[in-house]
Length: 342
Image (cartoon, rainbow, N blue to C red; front, side, top):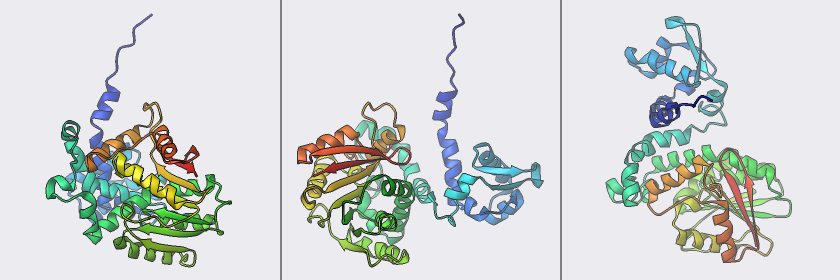
């Protein structure tokens, strides 16, 4: 029986993965997929539209073809490039399913910070803005309205599929009120409000975020059912509601602060109420959810002592606080809802 020789292709694909990553991040930064829209253009037309150097045009565009991020009809200078079904849906800013905001943030912030992963692994210290300016990430974000909007857009894009999945999969029929803690643009509230007309909502976040949420809720025509409230969830009690939700909030903090938020949710709920988190929950064996594990490395880079966690971790913390039952509900992609019942 012949011996199968080791193949280095997987190692090389992972090790050189930043080539492909930066190609698509630059395409998003240049708004290539938005400029194409539903059209097909020649390389020369795209180069003129995006301000590309002639040397770069065809290597750039044909790399995106080879990566299955563009389609091309024809060859050479006569070839015409167009979006794939996926890039048209998710990377054209004219699409309601646009999720390029997270890629814009990756390009503007995380790509460079991840270059210092080795230092983070050896020191346990964050490698983001605080390393360069001395100010924590959130202080930097909340002091700059443009960057705050970019961050909110990024979170909105990656969360939309999960919010729709939660709206469909979780039984909200027994509840009347929902408070989304760290509600940002109010997106979760608006998604749930459209799907469940009997519910009333509060989107709760810091005062600087309130105007962003109010504009988004008004644009959705839901001001009669979605209110905004402001406060500091580490200093103030949470608004009372039948359901407390937190989307991508717990992973931003160390264990002490995670426990503070879980206790705050418990105290704000009535008997029979539900606490729902949406996170890229790591599988309990920590072998499969590579995205969740890398998100935890990202929390190391962003905050040092913050981390992602397993469904079993979440269940243990909730039972310690007093929740009677916990279940895990898979959502979209690598994300799940952790649901704790009081």
